[in-house]
Length: 80
Image (spheres, rainbow, N blue to C red):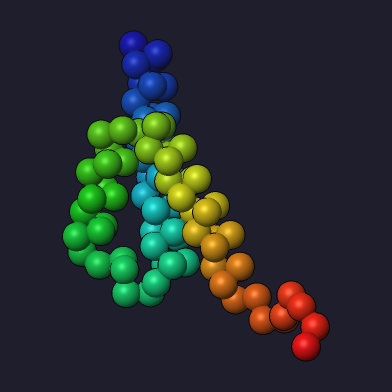
């Protein structure tokens, strides 16, 4: 019984973390992209996929953060 409880706890915890990773990635890209339909999809995916979606969402957050950092770079790469 305790093994099932631990598995359910890990599943729910990874679903919650995946939801927040998805929210961070959406907010990093565009402020208006985190609307109701995006939240619903994130909730359903995180509950169904659990730890797998956590890996996907963490990678998405990493790529979004890297992309926004590259887009905000202001110094030129070459001399005039």
